Image (cartoon, rainbow, N blue to C red; front, side):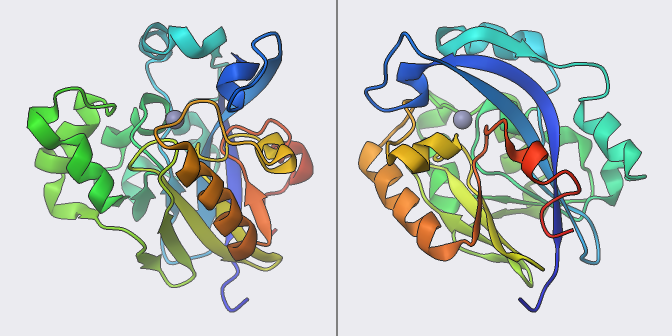
Amino acid sequence: MKYRYVIHPLLNGRCVIAGNHAFHEGDPAESWPYSCYVWLILGGERPVLVDTGLDNVEEMNHGAAHVLRQPITQEPGQSTREHLSRFGIKGEDIGAVIITHLHFDHVDCLDQFPAARIYVSGKGLELATANGWKGSWAPGKALEILTRTAKDRTVAADDVEVVPGIRTMWVGGHTPCSQAVLVDTAVGRACVTGDTVSLAANLERGIPVGVFHNVEECRLAMDRIRSEADIVLPSHEPAIPGIFPRGIGA
Ligand SMILES: [Zn+2]
């Protein structure tokens, strides 16, 4: 690989999901622990973030109660701001924010990065803002930022190079705005999947996630991610920090 980025998965919270939400036609008697992450990518001119994390845990737990078997808990030190400060990074230092999809736990902190270019799926944002935002799966606060307050630094497009060695790949599936992020590292090409592949077990079992907009797109995404990436980083997989204690590519 020409570019040698290092990806740091920053643990932003934990919860438990029932089997039928973790897997298409899954067993509701199963319980699956989920971890929530913000992904910090270092090694370029400026730090890049994939997703922004959760700030208002209470609002998330209220809004997503129907899929949470155990609510999200965020321990002291797990907020996005606290994680970044341990790297000596302030919100205004972030050069780019890539949004894997417009769900609350991934975009709640979008207002904390006033200098970042924001990358969101173009066709996804178009659908999320159709019909005066009515029935949209995206939080109004995020749509307000993307279409108004930060419109001039928002890149609403699909399959784009963010910086050399980091690019987005529209996958759909979980939501119409779902995109994966491919990152070149010293140990190969890594894929931050977004929720279209939520757990390593989705790939191992070959079964899509149970929360989806289009299950066929989920299957196609799994195939494509397998073929494009050497290292797959499922968005809610609890094992990741244990497998890569110093970060992916370090
Ligand atoms: Zn999601």
